[in-house]
Length: 578
Image (cartoon, rainbow, N blue to C red; front, top):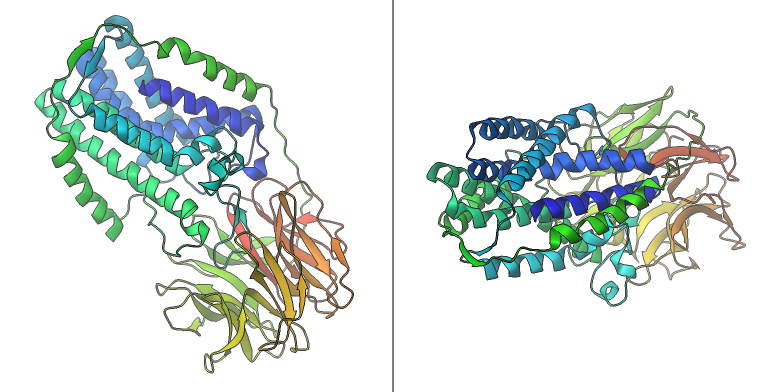
């Protein structure tokens, strides 16, 4: 049954990654048949290699063969290679040569399982104490994982009747400090689904513990406890983020547990593993026969698997390529290893400015080009900081329990407007004189004369609109939803911003005086976070038109688009040096 489930999910992944446009997928740079096959190989690494390690002792015990035991040991060592740093990287899910080692271990485990089944047969159905609880747990997991099951098939469950009112899925979401909005649940495989498969593996294989020898029983019981807690941690992290945080109910997130680390959350995981072993896996009774009739699922399963494979095989790769260019002095945030840091473009390369384990976002140049304001959680909470153009002399400007970030400089460089728990605030560049601007909003931007502030604000659960007004005065000109993150041009006559039409975001410009709007990016992809060149003739922005998010530059009329960056790292919030 387990292998049938794994095979079905692998077929879903192949089909979805083969036919879905690259820009809708997560951290892959290729689609079509090759892209789908590559993502399946990574799936064989994580989570299947971890599940295969649990299957091997059961297979070896059933075979009662020295040769099978030795092959099982070899397969287990190959599967264990998945824990080596860099073999599987959540920030880069393209297939690598190192992925062949755990994948071959999984395939060897499958071959050993089939060999034992051919010799011993599937066998009759058996009942083990606690089976009703196991069935109930799997049903609950299926209900929790419905958005991920749909995503594996390439669909958004929010667009299905009834389920769309229950699950968050096709709503746009941007975390604090991120201009780049994304769907709450992206198409493709999720680590919450990977965690679900690991928990199901632990639940089903726990039924075999009572029939194993004492030593194997202890080893497998402990390992199943690890799979149960580790998988549940990944389910909690993904589900909480997508269904709770992205609804705006809280900013607190369940810590990520994908990569083991010497942290408090992982100490809690180890304690839960011990409890899980003692209460769930240490004592499991022998299975008893309940009927001799064989199950029919092995005969039915090939039908959906074959259909999914055919769907994937008929789709070729579609990959847009934008000409490369260069532009110096554009600072932006990027996450090459999953943690956000600040980079700046210099002589055709990207130079890293900030380092460490914390995240740095939303950089903004001072008017004289000597300093950069940004937000960081390096001290445990989002605060506003300032550093010099080379990344040194970092000073914190705010210090409170609120979420402070998304800073912008006043034209004379003496004040910085920022967001303070959803409210617009202002502080002197020295860190003194913090006070409210008496508006609710995000992403403030000063006009060049310092008299008018543009920002976006929420109109309802999904939409944002742009406000142009003077601080602490009644709201002025409003740009209708759904538009975000306005930026004044150096020439004072235009505002660039993110605008959504249908299912895609574009870069728009509008004159606050005339109300005339122009859409600059008509590509069938998403574009975000515009920023003006010092002379107002060009715009830099982030787009997934080539697949993974990259930094682009175009003329202010939307022509002559060139790409400045490459690589799998997510990118966001560029700012052009004055």
